[in-house]
Length: 473
Image 1 (cartoon, rainbow, N blue to C red):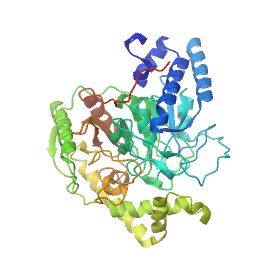
Image 2 (cartoon, one colour):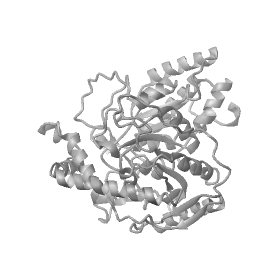
Image 3 (cartoon, rainbow, N blue to C red):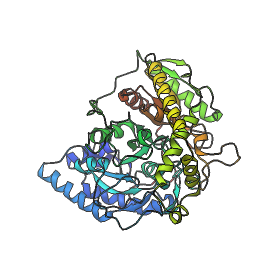
Image 4 (cartoon, one colour):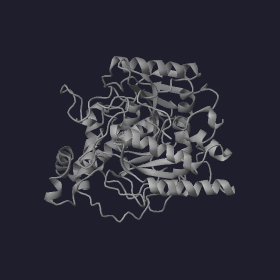
């Protein structure tokens, strides 16, 4: 392709890399366009809590010099990216959305995710918003306020990686980092019409360790599975600081997908056997599953056979919240999001015996899903059972849901099992809002998710929010 084929605002990371390599565009030009559009859109959506324009342009100029010398570092050199506010990043504050943190820094260390992107030559634009310490499924916090959905600013983009989801939907940067301990990549991707992958636990190193321990995965949030594969090729690299990391990831993330899905066995569960799903969302997901059948897959409508593991998840989640705030004094606790303070207080009352029982239940669910995937290459469900709802609340109005876990029943089970899972945009509901298709594979079989996603996205409608605009430079 050439620059004349599209405007900078619409570029994928893969296409931008090809244009950079061909000398059709420059890293500085690309960074300037992203920064101009951040300036235009961020007052509305509040996706960024920190923008490092000076640092980004300096990195872009360095990338431009490498391209001119013929020494580019690879396909991510000069590509604008963002980092979630929970992830330490050299030269940028990491406040975690909390007024209990200090603005003083020092901000002198890159976590593995930021380090791998910087080593690949990526241009780090800034930090995206999160709820306080990433504790819930929507994005607002006491320090930076409310993050809004580009499809309708009165609605939530989900969370906890809501800033990254909003930025991805508007292409404010071409690649975005999310983290997911209960759905925090997949929830905002479903609500914003973007793609997100929660890889198998251990493929992407995480340091410092999450208070949610082995529930927490890091991964890409992008406008396409193809771009996510590009990002994974850089970030799925070992780092000695992560004591939980497995061996080096052997997957070729950027390999071409198969021509079709003949020979695949796919389990389709509309509701896991216990979830009430909005009829219009179920219809859109049904239509996407029909595309899987059209690709040659054998699709069987079957539930995976487990009961709702929310009690197990909540025990581990609440205990993690207690650990998060355990070092705060009383004055700092008063400054916390009231919802976080409440679950931390519940977590502090969890007994060791109850915590261990939750671990045993988690192990049993993991074994059950391992057996399930001996028979099925993929499990497909809706990502969420409902549409985006009004900002400023952790749950939709009406009293049906009491906490964020109640309306995210498809995501957290697969944090318990550490399986790869992705949300792929598959259409619009009756209100014109995005619907996510949830793809889950066996542990370490991430390429099943990515192959299916890449084939599907070529056949499903591309979702672009009504507020999307072209290049600003």
